[in-house]
Image (cartoon, rainbow, N blue to C red; front, side):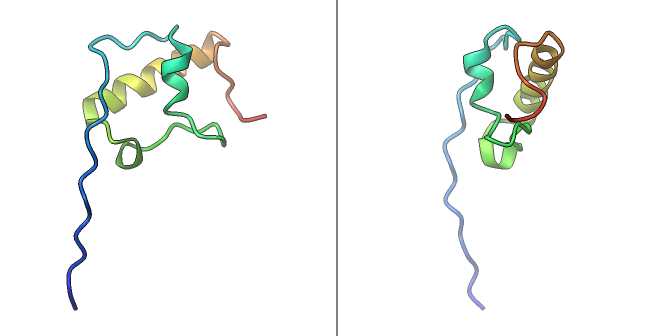
Length: 70
């Protein structure tokens, strides 16, 4: 059975500081359902994924982002 080779996606560029007030940037990592996108789909590093998730959770608690999709 031949192996399937997946094409590597280019790493997503993330700024050094992820601001929880930058809602436009954070919305790129939240699909229509409102959940945080996993890193295997978003293409960010593990460290950046943790920083993005933390910023999204802070923005949700400050009512800048919804907890669920409308």
